[in-house]
Image 1 (cartoon, one colour):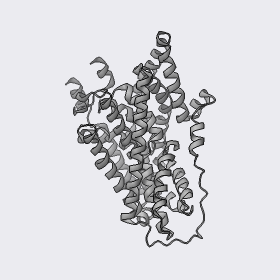
Image 2 (cartoon, helix red, strand yellow; image 1 turned 30 degrees about the vertical axis):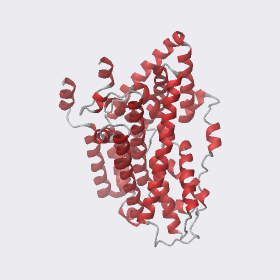
Image 3 (tube, helix red, strand yellow; image 1 turned 60 degrees about the vertical axis):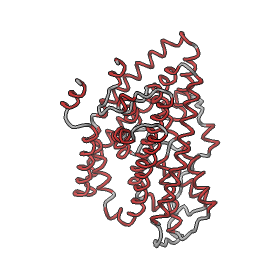
Image 4 (cartoon, helix red, strand yellow; image 1 turned 90 degrees about the horizontal axis):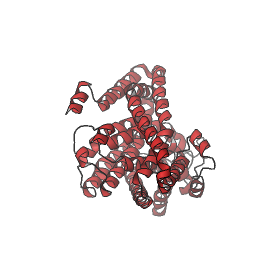
Length: 423
């Protein structure tokens, strides 16, 4: 009760502050246009603070997550569940995206000639190169460069090794546990400036991408956003209710803060601190499961990005007057699902994935020029879906492993990790 009173005395909830920052930023952007770009440094400061947290948080959280399980077989079981759920939901997401593209037909009537200036697509990594590059030849270099996939592999290996050596590994484990707790507290402090950073970001976005840019491509934006809403509210909530036997409303409330941060930062990896915090304190997922499943999801779970691929691929095909065959539809689903494993959870990563899809299916690469103009707007929605998917999988795995505190899950108040430890 005292915690609830303390939270009330502090005033407006964080997600409401963030929402106010978003609305105020949009209003300023519309009023001042490109001049609002002067506020972008506020957003850049916030994003830099988030980026500062990513590498140490992922590294320490994964090691703590693995060592807390104390059983390599359990870690393998949880990892298998997570990967299966992530890839399955990604395939569903792109199917929804293709459905939205077919339903709204955003590219019909545009009739773009192939003589438009071509866009040089960034080369997307192949599945084989992604798997080979997962192993860091120099772990220190991987940490310095922020190579998340390599950091995850090294952290998992180190965590397993510390578990296997038993008592000899306890001093090192205690160090990483202390560092992880410090990172959680630092995350809490950084999130206090989120409303100001998000205000600056939204002022810049709305001022730069005004109505004159959005209106011609409104159908694409609308199709992607409708698909994202359906995927979260219908599909994710449905799985939480049917497989997890949990309240979907409580899940939706729990994802508000991370989804809002993801919407404005457009980075799954950058939102990871907020995702881990909300999963533990609002949904009751154990530290071990959340510290293991969520960093993995930030790297390989790209449901929102896959959904975006479906809409944009159909948009480009329609805009250039190309009819896709059923085999091409299936190829888009397979390519996007597999490519999601190697797509970085950073702003703009979806364009790399889209270039791979267009090349595989044989669609004109010129289409990237059209989508790139509104990519930031689309990136906001797809990143939010990615984060909501990560939290959905963490919640389901926590429930299946009896590592979900349903008292916290069903509570209307946030329970800080420190208070959970006391309990």
